[in-house]
Image (cartoon, rainbow, N blue to C red; front, side, top):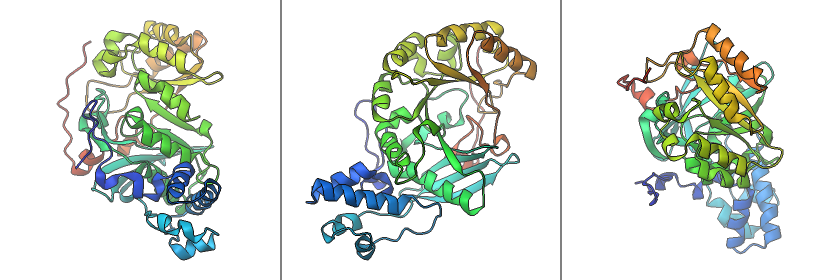
Length: 387
């Protein structure tokens, strides 16, 4: 049974997957709090928490984490903490259900949750100078963007912080054991779900992922993408130094509302005001702009987009759309893509084209479908966009 958010009926983390008993759901801070609550002094609790975090999460392989009271003693942790630590489950909360390698070296990973069998997807993306992992924050998604397979699932439940962490833990081990190179260095929360709709668990996971004693990812190499849940921006920036990405995909409210229902609640002007008001000094925003053929790819659309982002220190990633739930949404021709990018760049906007990766195995942007893919029950009965 799921616990519901009384403000909007959004399923919270299911009771079976609640992170309190998962070791991977605890960063050093929450472990310290747990040990202080069991009677430890703050200094002793901090020391024990640091040793546990380093012991459990600094390894690259998928071997079982040594656990139990003899292990705690070997780590120099006093007996006063053993009972509280022994109550935590060090095993991954996920198991690998399917591994789908693409022709370009991308690997789509479908994981099954131990708690309730829920299916979530991650994507390993090796590159010339870095390897990136795209991870999920929810089972499904409530935001219903017209171009996204995940949005067609609806929201089943939130992922616990440990289930977010274990996508990284298992993917890193799979890649390491296969001799993959270069090493995993970048994370993007661009998989299934809207991270801002599960922000407490996402922030807890981020604290562990960027802890030098654990996974050690540089905050500048971790990016969290949102459709534009503007009222959560202050909490996001207060809780992490990870990078922010905002999905725009249209240069005006009329078109954006058609493909992204969030625009009804947070129109473009309100979203921009919220970003300007919350963005810490020296930080920048990554704007994502999915390009659809003859729908949002005209030179005039590039002019509107440039005017919109001008007040914000930013970069714009232009993403030719991938095959998704609506066959009428097609990527632009190379000529139209090049013209759009050139026009946007002519306004002084830092622009990068993000080429599709893993498209042939359904691992590209907008294609993650979890349980729907596993059950092979796709449907293309999606309303067409106005021309």
